[in-house]
Amino acid sequence: MDIYKKCSICKRMISVDEFNKNKIAKDGLDTRCKECKRNANRIRMMDKNYRRRQSNLKKHRMHVLGIQKPMSENIGCSSYLGVYIAENKIDDLFDNLIKAPYGNRKYDFIDYNNKLYDVKSSILRYRKNANPYWEFTIRKNLYADYFICVAIDNRIDTNIMHMWIIPGDQINNKTTLHITNSDDILDKWREFEYELPIN
Image (cartoon, rainbow, N blue to C red; front, side, top):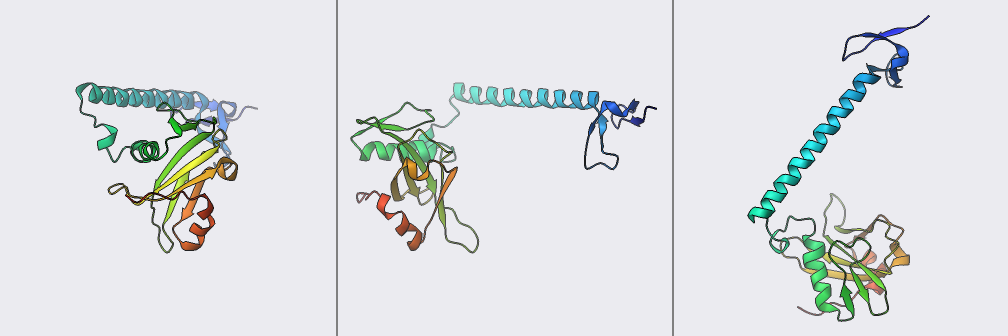
């Protein structure tokens, strides 16, 4: 004997075989039939693709009309700290490093011995009842031989407070690296710290 259930969308009485399982529901079945769920997903994806196309079109128009600010003036840009501040500073400080093309995801610099350097930057972050910290996104990058972690005070002043050159085998298995701005934690990373020139 077939058991039927009413779909909450199309209101048809359909065999329970036409419903997906749902552990949370009382009867263990989804409230929408498989066909209605497929249609809803299709519409959602079409809407998502439409919104993405509209966003890309808006960015393109802004770029063509020259409304979009260059990275050097756009402190809200996600690449501002990493590319414009940190990488340019490193380019000035180190004569033996060659800058990789913009957008290279595996490394940012290479030296004359073919060692790869990935630059990471972070502003000082604050949380309740704890010391401020820097958060560097490593993303388990196994390509980089070294990570240059640039600790910046804030997005406005962009003063570099610390710079660490850390061997990849120390941290490349991490997704993120947190360095707390406290003496005992900073002492732990002291051996990797690069002595910044004054000014």
